[in-house]
Length: 162
Image (cartoon, rainbow, N blue to C red; front, side):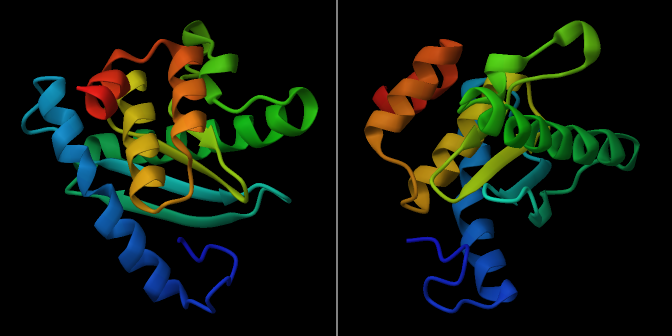
């Protein structure tokens, strides 16, 4: 179980190690997309209760020309979902996506935190955070199915159900 809010008294370093281990799933998801060499991006974890950013972490070696964009997108997705969850009950940033405004899916709301990722196409970003949450044991199969149904995420379907 992820010790996001001190459930086991984890230090920031211990939390980072857990997340780093869990997001190794990005390579598997990138392969599903046929993006063999695209195993990079930014992962964000935000506290659900007050929106505080707990972690922004670069996964892999993000090209310098894309790093700022992917970090900003990951933060935006999680902030938007934080606001929409409290106002409308959203559980996925896909529910408020607006491609014409550069607002994409790729963030999910969990019990205590919001996870987001940017670096792949939006459905793959969502698959990365779903797989990470599952690896960390902070999401149920029922929640996964609910989020997959919202976005009709074929990458996540293939990853979880074959």
